[in-house]
Amino acid sequence: MDQFQFSLQSFDFKRALVALLLSFGLAQVIAGVYILTFRGLSYTRTVVHSMAIGSLIPCMLLMAVGTNIAAGIGVVGGLALVRFRTTLRDPRDMLFIFAALGVGVACGAQ
Image 1 (tube, rainbow, N blue to C red):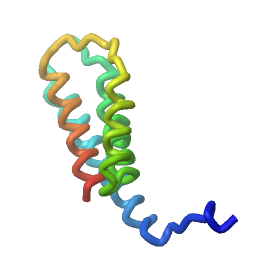
Image 2: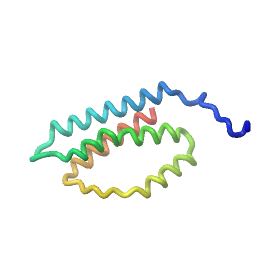
Image 3: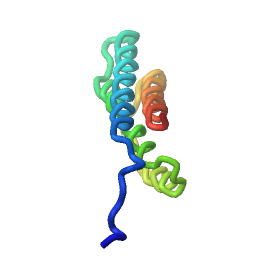
Image 4: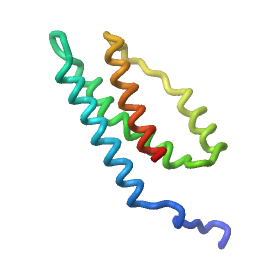
């Protein structure tokens, strides 16, 4: 039974919560800038939602992987299977989504 016990001593819940909240807050700022600077008839709400929520995923993944290289390779392999079916009308949309993902990576890596 002792072999199945694990320790959470190396995981700091306060740092994780701050990283997730910071990632979400900065992604909200990026989404707000996207909305304010959009030039066109109307923006796609799903793109804005993916910016706001999408920054949390890389943040959580980087906190879960930490410095474990084997787990990082496994996560990257799993993410390689994901296919995106959303067509982006403007390359600017893609840049804002990458900015939100970058914020998530930066916050997850601390």
